Image (tube, one colour):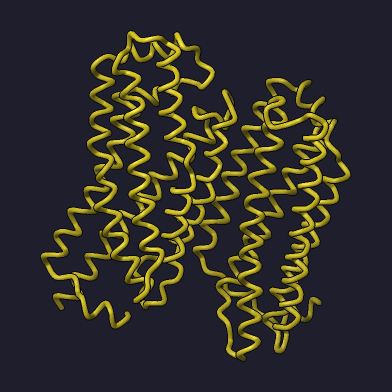
Length: 194
Length: 245
């Protein structure tokens, strides 16, 4: 693995992509700060409501996203190796499947909360829970669209034998890792913090 | 550069018109925060959705003529977004080539945004029009104004997304606008989306007076629009210089 990495130069990524990644991370940091500010105002309420969340489902989604990030990273490595584009396409498809699994778990989780009579207007904790995970989910759907577009472009270039540009690969993979990082902060903030 | 560009170059007369149109957009952008936000004091600070009818009625009664004047300035200046979006569409056509769709989407979204902003301002104006009417009714108009202003996000998201898509699809060398402006547009689109949630909340950061539904989307719109203005001015300057050379 490391010898393969040593032989392949890093994928050239457009500098403009960092506008999105840096911008998103700053805004999510702001979201987290606002959450912590409100949490500090009524810690008992936040702890009590947080305790009703299913930590198992949250942890499951964390594992799913980490796995998807591993697939994306493997795809980016594969795409730079001779004849690795078929493998990259398979990795991207696996990452997309992980994304779909994440959405399914989330929908199941939301459905359970709604059945328990809990919704976005229940209290301040659930306002943040639904809004922050909802915004993250919306970004994740955009990320899946980007991964899907990358996979389609890759499939097209395999069919025609033409070399595809790496712009979309760079953008979708950076965006996906960014989503993963955001979730890794979001998960302990909402599910674990007592 | 595609063949289309060299066929229709930007001569001095068109350059002047485009230049004026961009400045219409810049001046209009100042009109909204200044006229509506400061002079009409809708942002100093914004009334929370949880304000009582009496508080809203008092806000309108205290506003007086100055508040109406601020709304008038904004109503007059908001249309200035359109000439600049026409220049933006013209440059997007250069990015997209002979069959542009994002340029057309962009102009439609700009038109509808101006229409929605005007509608919101007219609701606010109606609230101030008879400050002595039933506070419940004043509150209703105030609600209508804010909800019209904050919640119809699909126009603004599509607008920003269309601009981003056109910039990133530009294959010209050099491109009409730097690619990071395209990424900025996508980021701005993602940030503007949560505004629709203002329908749900009477308080907190996602309510219409909150940080995440009002202040951040407003700030990001201004940053996006001024960035576009700067790079549009550069684009037409470069085009005119190429036409003279």
